[in-house]
Image (cartoon, one colour):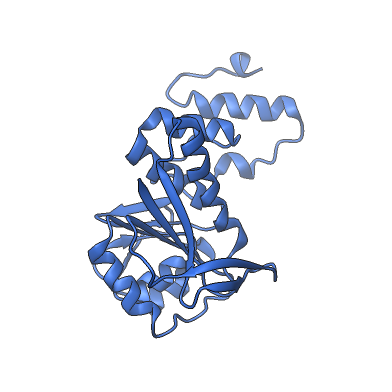
Length: 229
């Protein structure tokens, strides 16, 4: 069984918690209890979310994990003194250490991203570069992988990261089935830009949206106006 510890700090971004659903459906669709997911925090107990309501957690010192996923927050909250050594120990004891959204700020604060490539939410990229100049920030990436360290861009990019983790563990077919079940795109490549030129076209009708979707799925082909019409 692969143990996943999802690390929450006060004010954690609620959308990032959707990563737990990726592992839930990986279990359902693979027909086995492959993942055990724990929500963890420094002290355990209730941790308030970005929406104000709280989520029950376990103290992170209670056990070790195969994979630890650090969730971000909206306010770039400073890490507590106990969090830094926990993350440093985790890098040496776990198979993977990942962050979602601004969770990369916590990994960088622990010195774990120095000399490594990483990403974060595009909105905070300049702040990240100024605070952590030793990190090879790739702000256009959906997610990055550098050895045991995985980082994702902001908001829904955490879903792409979680699907990539599932793909590494259980294969592309299971990850594809999970994405299909959750009605999400399977899966955006890590090198894909956080911005989409197609989205910026703002189609005015379903017919235009259908044409844009078709074009996006056939980028390697020659597409005539007549064919798209």
